[in-house]
Amino acid sequence: MNATPTATPTHPVPAPPAGERLDDQRAAITELGDELRALVDAVVRTETPPDVLRLVTDEVRLLTGQLTGHRRVRAEIPAVDEFPGGVRMYSPVTGPGSPLAPPMRVTPGDGGMIGRCTLGIAHEGPPGYGHGGMSAMLLDEVMGWACAGAGLPGMTVSLQVRYRRPVPLETPLRVHARVTGTEGRKIFLEGSISTEEDTVVTAEAVFVTPDPDRTRALFPELRAE
Amino acid sequence: MNATPTATPTHPVPAPPAGERLDDQRAAITELGDELRALVDAVVRTETPPDVLRLVTDEVRLLTGQLTGHRRVRAEIPAVDEFPGGVRMYSPVTGPGSPLAPPMRVTPGDGGMIGRCTLGIAHEGPPGYGHGGMSAMLLDEVMGWACAGAGLPGMTVSLQVRYRRPVPLETPLRVHARVTGTEGRKIFLEGSISTEEDTVVTAEAVFVTPDPDRTRALFPELRAE
Image (cartoon, rainbow over all chains, first blue to last red; front, top):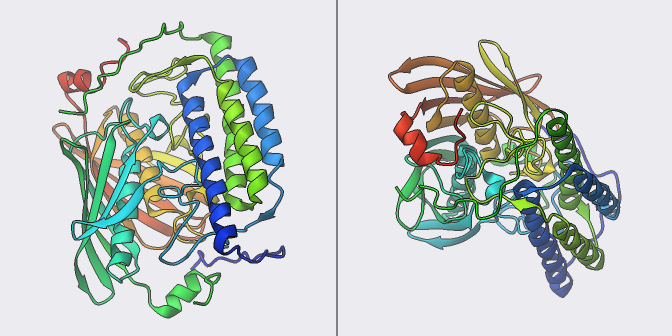
C-alpha cells in the first residue's frame, strides 16, 4: 500500500487550544476563510489589467510570508479539528476556514443528513453551472456525514452520480443523503442535490467501515480517544 | 428548466484582449493564481494566532477592494477564455488562475487524454488523502476533455467512481480517460487515477452531446463561432 503516510511532525506541535481560546481561534479562522472566499470570487470574476494583477500578486506573496507558525505536515490533524466525527475547519467542502469550500453546512434531517450551500463562480464547470465534480464532492461529503450520523463511520468505496440537469451557480442547494442498508462492513447510501424547484442530481454509494488495523494503518496520526 | 441563466451583463463588456495583450493578461492571471495557491496552502496548513489571522484578514479585504474592473455575471464567459473546447483560465480543476485548482494539466495520450496534477493539503478529505469528491472532479474533467478530443463535446450524464485505495496528497497523479464507444448522442468513457505505483481510482461515465437547441438554451452567452 503506497498510500501509508510516511510524514510525521518534525516541528514541536503546540498544545491544542481549548475552551474560549479554541472558540476564538476557530472564529478567527472563519473570518479569514470568509474574506479569502470573497477574494477568490473577485479574482475569478473580475477583469483586471495585468499591472494591477501583478501588484496584487506581490501583496499576496507578502501575506503568505506572515503565516509563520507551526506548519502541519501531510496527514497531521489540525489542533482545531475534531477527527473522527467532528469539526474539520479546513475541509474543502464544509470547512469555514477553507477558501475552496462553498462552505456547506450539514445538519441531521429527513432520515439522514442535509447539506445546504450555494456554489459560486469559482466552482464553475460549463458557463453558469457547477462543475460536475463539485456535485460529486457535495454528495460524497454529505454521504460521509450520513454514515457517521448512523454510527457507521466509513470511507467511500463506490459513488454513482446521475446528472439530471446542470446545477445552477448562485442558487441555494439542498444536498440530502441517507443510509439505505448495511451488509457486514458495507454501508449503502442514496443522495440527491435539489434546488427549490427541482432535483438536479441523484446518487448512490457504497461506503465501508475500515477494520481497526486498517484504520491505524491509514491514519497513524489519529489521536487516541 | 429552472437552470436557464437569467443573468446578462449589466456593465459594458470590454473588448476581448488579443495577441500579445492576451498572452500578457493570461500570464498575469497565472502568476496571481500561483501566489494564491501558495497562500491557500499556507492558510490551511499553518497554525497562526488569532491576532495575526485578523491582521491578515484585514489585508485580504483591502486586496479584494483593489479588483475594481468589469465583474462578469453568472454564465458570462471570461474574455480570456476559449469556450467551447479551449482555455478555461478559472476552471476549478485545470485553471491556472483558479486558487482552487491543483491545477491539472491535460494532454492527449494513451488513446484519450491524460491529466497530471498533485493534490495539496487544501484538497484533503480523510487526513493525508484527497477528498473522494476531488477524485470525481479530476476524472469528470479529463473525461470531458476526452470527449472533446474525440470531436464529441459532451456533458456528464452519469459518473461511476470506484475507490480502490485512498488517493495520497502531495504525490504526482496521472488521470487517464478515453472514449470506449458511442450510441446516438451518448458517449461512453472509462478513466482512472494512478500514482507511480498503483491504480487508486477507476471510473466509468456516460456523457451526452446536447442538440443545438438545448445548447443554446443552456448557454445563451455562447459567442457565435
